[in-house]
Image 1: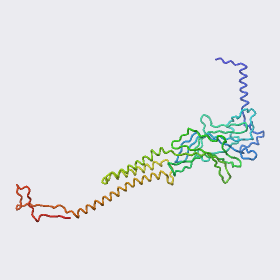
Image 2 (image 1 turned 180 degrees about the horizontal axis):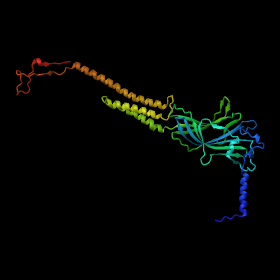
Image 3 (image 1 turned 90 degrees about the vertical axis):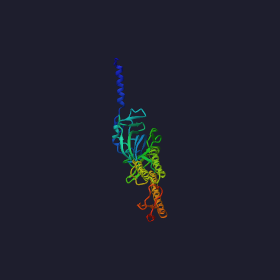
Image 4 (image 1 turned 120 degrees about the horizontal axis):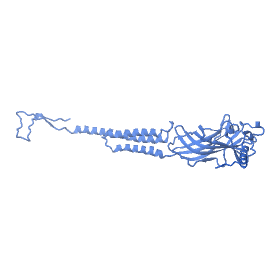
Length: 373
């Protein structure tokens, strides 16, 4: 294909470059006429009122809920919007909003928000940095960013595994008090939670918004929070803890149908059941931190251990009672019944038995002994 370059084509290319050049922005073009009036360390307070920053959070995923370290991971989109009346609008701004270079964040004022209960915050940079800035026609700044958060959650395990945990995501101002800065949620859509969120051992029962502003020695610092209510699923524990443990207890009761004389069989069955229950109890708490209070699973496993131990004690008691009864009956028998008569014939030439005599035994009178104990 031959490309014909004529005067009309060059004029069109020049017009495109002229428009692109005219739409390019420099940071100084949005500053006030007197740049000294703009301080990127001071919030844009209007008529002495505190600057209001509105937040929106989109929860993309919740995963890696670790009971041992009491943490969970959340992927979110977070937007912050505030109005800075000190800025100027570009002369060529004809749209509702305009995209600004993200490098301007270092030169302009923005909220010093941080995640209060976060242990690690990861900024996403796959393909391109996942954040942008919009400037609206009413001088509102919108900053959107995608983050991966490792958040702490104060879990309570008194009802474990029937527990319901309440985990929060707190956003607080680092250096501005409520006299200068106030955090609030968007009025229309403050929170969006992805419907496809699926947790292996928990159900996301509810998600609410709240205010967590606290008073410190230096003043009141604004704070907002997202509260996740997580209820534990019982399917895993039903098939890996409850049903096997109940079967072990029932198995120990089989010793009731074994004869008391079979000592090895009954003792081995009960002792093996106790050892298996001990292993099962340790396995059920493998993922939990070593807490000092009693949990629901502890009560269940301890009750099962008591049942198995009671079956072993029942056999010991039966064995003792049967042993005493046997000794008493033997002693009574020795006292009331004489032993058999022991006859010791002594053959001599004088009292010899004839060869042709079959049923006649001649016993001397002095040689008959009666032994009675």
